[in-house]
Length: 306
Ligand SMILES: CC(C)(COP(=O)(O)OP(=O)(O)OC[C@H]1O[C@@H](n2cnc3c(N)ncnc32)[C@H](O)[C@@H]1OP(=O)(O)O)[C@@H](O)C(=O)NCCC(=O)NCCS
Image (tube, rainbow, N blue to C red; front, side, top):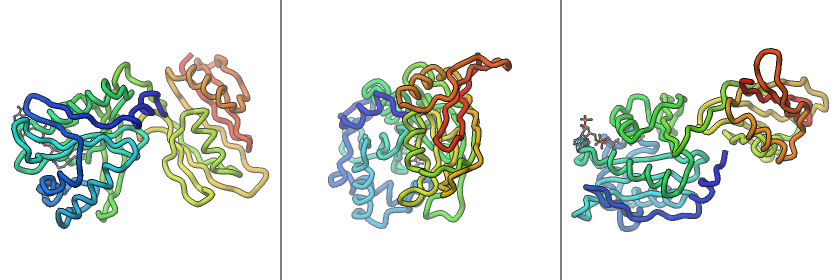
């Protein structure tokens, strides 16, 4: 789901920030790579990172350029207030649908509360400066130090998922922790199904526009299979769309429990021009529901407590 504030964030650039012990300067890969290589070239620090240890300063510079060049990235180099030597990096990742935090410190800066101090400033900037509705961090379940940072800056667990980094042989468990800027966004609860459809791209567009779906993956051009997720976090209910050439397909009915977002989602579905097969009504079993119909006849029952 794209919030108004998230669109705005894409247009803004990082600003310099200071905390009691730190100066956070917008990441400049050309200037900062040499100093930051102390972190990105250290196997102990990189044990948890999503790419292998950088081979040299040029490799670190390339990786930093790639990260900083992603749409929506807001990255800062962490420096002591009274010095120039980079201690690490903190900020918001680019190229993600849910705003995601990142942090890293060179080993000799660990154990002084500097990561939490820097990440705390980044969170305040994200939520109150940029006006993002929420931020999250994906932390490997075994990365106790990073979990400590996340919790110290007010992020709480939202769910877990399995992920495999290309340079690792086995998948690992990720904990997704999040913090909302204001009132907590209600979470859409539970559903997973496979829907055969004639036009995967078109159904994906419809589910994004009408129900705030997020594209989890898409395979083929035009897409033959795609995953759609619902709700504000990168975990939660999801369904899969699979291409079929058949004109008649077995119809699937999917029930999405959307809690307190029911009315807003109904308005959104109507505004998107979706086929509302049944308008909102109370059921005998204590829910309020409306039904959105896809062209193949599949029905998405959107439900909430009455
Ligand atoms: C994750 C990482 C940035 C955490 O660094 P850190 O220094 O442990 O984190 P913090 O800034 O929160 O510091 C907390 C530690 O400082 C200590 N500390 C000392 N003075 C402090 C102060 N004034 N305020 C707060 N904590 C202080 C705390 O007791 C704690 O130490 P402990 O864990 O031994 O109890 C660092 O381990 C790292 O770079 N890891 C590799 C990269 C990585 O994993 N990134 C995240 C991927 S999700």
